[in-house]
Image (cartoon, rainbow, N blue to C red; front, side):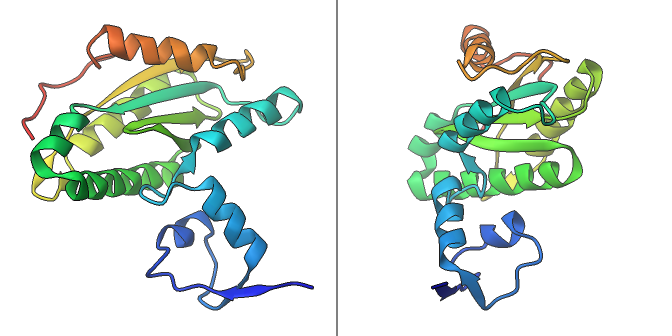
Length: 196
């Protein structure tokens, strides 16, 4: 028996981006549950759990492998939350998710919310120079985007893997995350931080 569920996209706006071509109306319940299980409600990006499922799958298949990983961290997000409140922080994450969606549609990137204000992107088919170029364009797009009358910045770590396997043991991600922490969230060329 196939159950159907009527979706209201005003309640689930991220579904239209995740599942292009969906029309308002009936959609199989099991697919909706999978989308909700795998997708962060604030950002419309995959959850961390999906990242590690993807990495585990990549270890067992000969399918296309990512050539790089981007580690993103919204700068001074705790202070933003403290100053403007959690509702503003949620709107900021939602707006940030919209920017990531645009980049995922333009480039071969798959974004995952790693935790809090941290995100990971798996990049496919790019050389090291192009990865840094994409990261810089993303950094600028975030810096130039208004979020409730405020502006934020993001720090991005870039790990080029080339033909090497991106491992599920989190070594690449851990390495980039530690770089971000060690260098005070400044992994590569960043403009001066804008005050929130």
